[in-house]
Length: 369
Image (cartoon, rainbow, N blue to C red; front, side):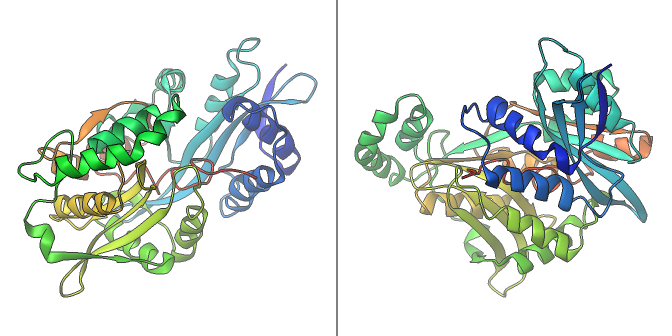
């Protein structure tokens, strides 16, 4: 009978080949870079809690036919230590011949020793599986936000994947956008113009990984349920996040008062004329709207057409009235045996998504040579 077991070093080649064929949609062999990264992420990075690990689905003949990537997370709930599993990358080679392979993988993971399991990248099929196993979708964490900055460039960027020849119109688009944005005035859905306000009293500074990691730990302390990172682990994660070639140049900044006090931070990727992708935004209580405005100013000044990211409850309220658009493309779900942990997530008191998930990994947004 088909079975499920922990992911091991001997499975790397088979999983890399499935990843290449089914997720990357490529007929080329999986590169040595991809194989090495799967090993580094799902084996080496997870050594601190080997009981919470990725799983493979195995056919009767012993060959690997499916994979569910799991990253162990140490978390805190008040004064309690919480073992958590972030479930992400899923691939199956037997969806038609064995449609229950994914359910077997997920059931095996959820029966593990962790107190909390969650995912931030669940598609419609995966969401149905999670729900069937009594997981709870978290609506405030499950929306993608989008802020258009330059309308003409945005239209070109949105159409470019299907009509690459439109890139030749980029100079015309920039001219049209300069005309639209220089008019200023009130904020509009189709463009962004910096408005005078409290954000003018703050400055953004580039941050190295050690400084950024330390401030992430500080700002995460406001959440009842939060990652219990150590500085070294978080710096390692940010090191992974340095490479996202498909998403563009990395911008990692801290937002400060004129006196130098940090009140927020952001990490996003994007190139001129493109649509930026945000991995993380964090803010001290009461500074959410200001930090978001500094993020938008940065993206606009760098010539991005738009910027997008994933919602978090503490930022969602600050976005209202600032012309952010919202849509749902994937879901964040939580499975917990302890009702207190579940309630903290449902009430928006958990720090999830981005760095508390898999959004920081190279699997999302990078090329593998």
